[in-house]
Image (cartoon, rainbow, N blue to C red; front, side):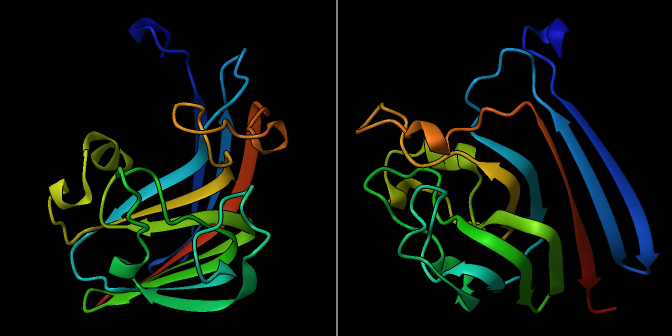
Length: 190
């Protein structure tokens, strides 16, 4: 908020129960005036221990950011969560898959399924972005069993100009307003 010295981001969420453990979520985000290049706009969920695999309908099988989708294939894909990470020389944001219309995360804890009215950029990881950015080597990351899920309506392309080239202009986030809808279905052991 403005009081903390940071510009205010407005995020409105309407959650509508369709049935037990089945929700339709409408999202609306307004970025501050003067925003010229955001990183991502979306949701972050952290799931409890007990999820092992990801299944998605969208681009894959490897990571593909908005400016790196030419070699990606549209299809239905599955992967163990621990294999989705890309171990770059220095840990950083990684593993996003674009064009995703459905994601299911499964394991002994149950199944969490998200369905997207419009295609989203999705990542499923064992680490938060902060943990990745704070680590200097992959082996320095502390093991975790929870699962971090990003559902992004908009995502910047690869590159920051800190190491290598910056993201080309067509792949930067320049809009101030984003609206999207998605469905969350939970199937957990009782």
